Length: 442
Image (cartoon, rainbow, N blue to C red; front, side, top):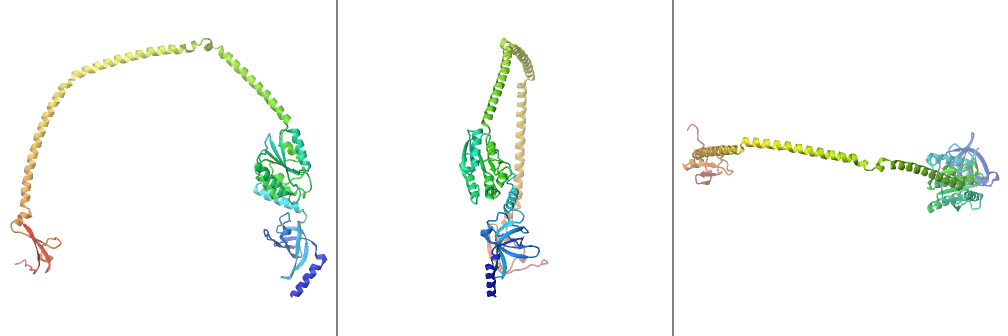
């Protein structure tokens, strides 16, 4: 089995017709594997073949393969010994019926559009830039056109060239590096990125995702001028402003200095005329005020106030005199009423009444004390007669157990219990030797 498989593999590898095969088919069983070899199938209406595309070849594919996509592939046919099945080792792959670069362009355009890179609010270009950065080829016509246009329109602006590759495999990385360099310097008002026209392959660095994201993240307003007017790159869509040509980019970046100077002169004249008009109006107002009676006879300005002050002064004196007269009458009336009431006699009379009531109150208190003292003495005598000590003095006593509980019946005691017998002048501790219960009938 192994020998047969090896023989068949040598046949496949040695066949010159199988060394380079062109196939058109539909991608099937495709499961993307990031940064790895890709395994899938190609099929048409009647057949299917397994396919493998190594990472080195797959990284060169400009578009994103998808399940069901019809593609044109170039590769070699060989036999895989482990399974005994033949398969195609793909070296190149393009969409069938549409260019690979165009397919990649549309896919990236759709992706970035969904992320919102095209729809965000664009940054405004400064009206009067001082320093303009230009990223382009140092030997192309782009920088010459930009410099010529800026020198003609706005010669006071400074142009700084950041030379970069604008074509080839390393161009995208170089463009991104220049964008970062411009932003790190941070003293530029506007950035122009451009190159001349060419095929889609020539313009492809400006369709790379890394370039688009670098333009989007740049804080400096960017003018994109890539290709001809009919060419539209991803960089054009992400940039803040798109220019059809390098000359148009320069015109967008700077104004016409002579026009601006003319506008300034016109504004200066308008400002001068306006100020002269305002001064004339103010002067007329001053003349009118100067001719006013206030300035001609300033004393008239406060005549009315002096007269009002005199009136108020006279009126206040009258009111004060009236109030004083009224209060004097009230005081005399009150003094007369007070004398009629004779408050000193009333006070003497009431003092006499207070002394009499005080004597009566003291007498009543003494009588109350005596009565209560007699009641207390009698209550003490009666209480003393009922005192247990008086009774015990006549020969009586009482018995308690060890817990000081009074013993009222022999049923509360047992033989050998210790009891206390309380007498008039002390107590006796004893033990019960015998219990004798009395018959109530005895």
